Image 1 (cartoon, rainbow, N blue to C red):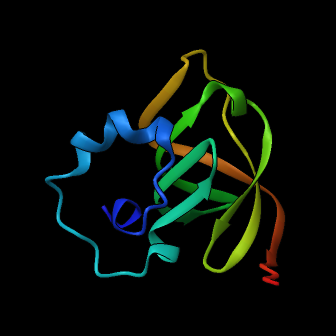
Image 2: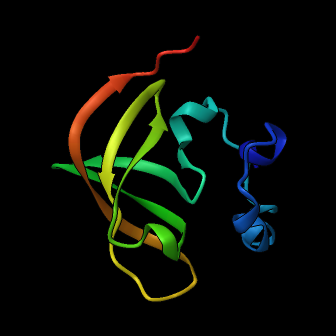
Length: 107
């Protein structure tokens, strides 16, 4: 819901909005509750050894790819798990961190 309010929810994820609209709103800042990329949304990322576990909503275009996501005011390079669906929404997905996070440079 924080992504919708901030107008940052990618269009491909809109079909899944109804699955989350009745959930309790998080009091945590949006930077803590989501990893974001134009074709990848990772909700409630919880740190695990070498990566994160959480709920993934992603387009097939990032399946199996290394991408950069924004999280905690940093850029994280992660490996997206491979999947066959055009769009995948799945809970308890593990992603690997490929490179240590870098600060976001805003101009």
